[in-house]
Image (cartoon, rainbow, N blue to C red):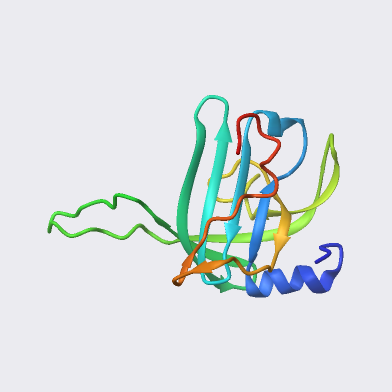
Length: 158
């Protein structure tokens, strides 16, 4: 999928950013390395890695909220317990996004960015596609983890 083609950009704006995305390449990615994977089944994972905090991930559920909008709900390993003793679901976040050309010291790239922000959701940088629209592997109706293609170069990453 070539994001320089308006047809594909429109497809993502309409159907959501299904696939794997990682931080816009550039010298700034030496300080943080971030990625997000939107699975076709409406599940996803946000991953970050920094020298100070190490690797972290957050599972989430997502849906299309309109043209150029995704809505994401974090899925925490230990949900908050309400006053009634029941587990509370996390809030949904509405994330309007754009796909635009971004320039860095590493070149010019088509990137996904949250409208009104420099990055996307909890991520500090815009995102470039690694794998768009490719279904994840499935095991018993649960998404199987797949390594992010933009992370193999990280020291200590397996």
